[in-house]
Length: 110
Image (cartoon, rainbow, N blue to C red):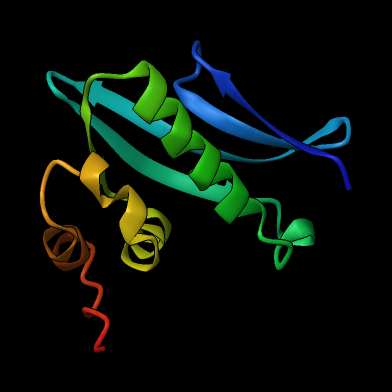
């Protein structure tokens, strides 16, 4: 399984490719000072392979390197990703519990 994540600037999304097929994408929108991660999906036939996690991890690395905006996670998958990866929470515009509340996700109890 050969994966690669590409930034499709024209469509404002990051795409994950498995060999020669696009199997998922994560859309974003840009506002002044903010990049909103609005939707993440992976082809149902390829779920359970951590492809969404790989894609979001590389999307955030790209944002860290190439964007000045702070991240606003709107997509529930991205909110959960931030909750379980505190090492990237410095990219957030607001604390993760605000994003979880906006998505109506119950905070993780430690």
